[in-house]
Image (cartoon, rainbow, N blue to C red; front, side):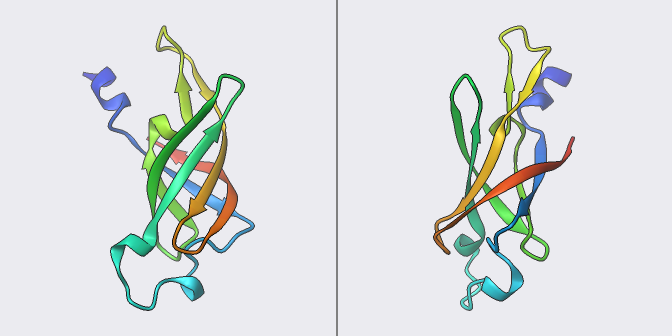
Length: 102
């Protein structure tokens, strides 16, 4: 049962240095698509690309576990990757770090 949850687990990443989705830069129209972001993870194996959404004051992004961790073929080792977040709405990219994983 635990292996099923590995792919359904949500992870929170915090943005560093940019204002992707910060409260002052949120869309005035309040549309949900303004909070969607692209999450990329780079490692020595390749690049992972996924999506996420901004929560709270705009400095937190929620995304899937597999968007920021690569799992080995054996499934027991997870390699951390360098995470970046791109906001198509704002046209900005920021480095990010993993804040929590569940």
